[in-house]
Length: 400
Image 1: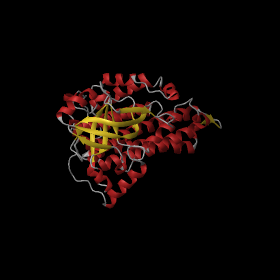
Image 2: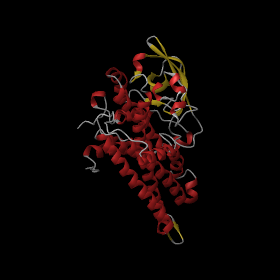
Image 3: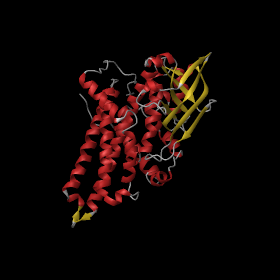
Image 4: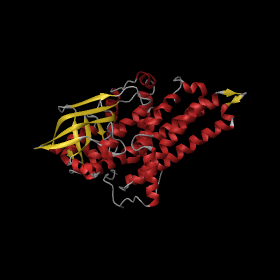
């Protein structure tokens, strides 16, 4: 039986993330968004509070929290701004949980421990200029050279690219298999900033998430020690899909926070703003938009609590996570549009945060699997074209 009642620890982590976001970020996020500046100091503060080690066992320097706690933190951070949640999605969801589940003990000690402690920042490099949903289209190559692999290629649209210390990089180790569209020719590597031939850059002019860092990674003959291969040669696709399960979970749970932010701001404004002699909240069409936000939030939250419950039980949750992510991101896009409409002309300028919510919501409908990809996945599950084996996922069961 699924029990959605939050534990004392989950409530504590929820409050920790909420207080941090409200006190440390909310007062200055408008200015940072306007200037498109990423505040690196928040990484240090998040590390000191243990937020960067959520859901990582204490033996590896983490907080030992469960996966619902991680989701709740994402919700609270995105309630203030999407750029905050993005940090957890890539640092924990895509990178640290992947190293925890696929890494050797030596890799965990060298990379996971400092990441969980917030001493090192990590990200994930899969997407390329010409490859997104179609993973086989990746062009980055890795060639064996004695005790090293030589990496060459470009990664694009990488969150935290210009501030991260450690990168998970996916590259072809067998180009013949690429020609046959055989995923088993893809492998994964842990790459460090400072390795000769590795350079990064920041992308400017984004529609939203302007207070977050998004960039590119360039690799020119980067020599990576053979012991930095994550998993076995040819397991890159499996590792990438595992990582995306965790990344999508954090993205979608965060999107519920954006829905809630739109709802709360809209309720406040609808009770204060008057037209035709009464608060606009009294008008039926405003009520309809408020209803959409309420339903969107409640349904998205329940879908993510179910996905988090599956993860806490060590169950594979690809189907549940995909549906939750797709629904929540769609709900956030709809909620942000409604919020701007409720605010009217004021929603069209940056005097109020709903304008920023509207710009921020669009990214999540595209990254971590586009809306279209998730629709195809859900249809394939329903039609029986896609069936997950009833096995454990690689995620460790959280500590009691």
